[in-house]
Amino acid sequence: MDILNFELSEEQEQFRAVVRDFAASEIAPNCAQWDREEVFPVEAVLKMGALGLFGLPFPPEYGGGGADFLTYCLAIEELARVDSSMAITLEAGVSLGATPFFLSGTEAQKEQYLLPMIAGTALGAFGLTEAVAGSDAGATRTRANLDGEQWVIDGSKTFITNSGTPITKCVTITARTGPDEISNIVVDSGTPGFDVAPAYRKMGWHASDTHELGFNDCRVPADHLLGERGRGFQTFLSILDGGRIAIAALAVGLAQACLDASLEYARARQAFGGPIGRFQSIAFKCADMSVAVENARNLTYKAAWLRDHEKPHRQAAAMAKLYSSEVAVSATREAVQIHGGYGFMEDSPVSRLYRDAKILEIGEGTSEIQRLVLARGLDLPVE
Ligand SMILES: Cc1cc2nc3c(=O)[nH]c(=O)nc-3n(C[C@H](O)[C@H](O)[C@H](O)COP(=O)(O)OP(=O)(O)OC[C@H]3O[C@@H](n4cnc5c(N)ncnc54)[C@H](O)[C@@H]3O)c2cc1C
Image (cartoon, rainbow, N blue to C red; front, side):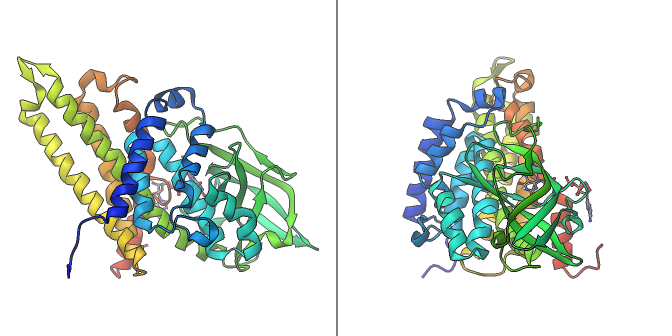
């Protein structure tokens, strides 16, 4: 019996090839245009749904693929090699939209919300962040007061992914339901008093959907409470552990794309009578990048493996997210450098990677917050 096995299973390899083909045929030919026009490509997202991507890590009884978490990470990695916007649309749809219903929904809520999300015909969003509550998410100011059989919601959320697409079914928000109580409440798209602001203009992830949300005397039925009253914050923290592994997988895919593009350019680009790849300054950048990508992938797959084997994985998820996102950002910097002036042009393969990478060090917990999690795990009295 193998004690340590670095091979993917045949099923995982096969599924990875399916996603790779899909990304090459359906996303690669169009993603530069989506990026330029800043459009959310709903038809492509529906095709991702038809391929089963949004149901991958959920059990077959809910219509899911019954795959392990690592297979879901492989799908994100493959999409991110081609387009981060589609990779984050999948990640947010699964880890932030559907997972809260899977973990804490009633059977009726699962039927109404989770099933169409798994089928990939609807998207859910998760609204935690507020203008004055980001890393300090416990500082949430949005309130939900029970008035008879209805929650009355007042407040706002910022930077919420997948919250205003044509197929967004709902957003689950964290809200104060008592003095020391934060709960999760589901708000259906189109509910009166729920305002979705125009999409943000962002540095990257141009084809991903991100909005500010407003709640003004917004009323939803009492049974829109998701999970136990007062447990909203804890539920969210456990959702984040999985989300961070998935973001690490996205970072691995993006960093691999930098390596692929850099190698191709280093072989093809001629200067001083030969390919630039013969200069150590270029070749060593590629060599270092290959080590970093391999390390990031190993940390990410190990975190996914720990999760699949129901072992503690908060530290491993933080390590994978911190390391992989920093690798992705520095890989884009080096890849642009290797491409010279062409790297600065929008039609080079690396300039979009450069713009798309930075958010990875910020979303689902900044690098500083990952270091905080890790330092606390080391029993340091860090603030
Ligand atoms: C494109 C995009 C999509 C997003 N999607 C979603 C979504 O779907 N749902 C959602 O809820 N949120 C979403 N977010 C929000 C994201 O999770 C937050 O931006 C992130 O958690 C950081 O919060 P903040 O922006 O308020 O920064 P702040 O918390 O204000 O941080 C500012 C700086 O201070 C540092 N800092 C803060 N506290 C500490 C500390 N204790 N120790 C050390 N340093 C600290 C931070 O690391 C950072 O460098 C999204 C953001 C973006 C940009």
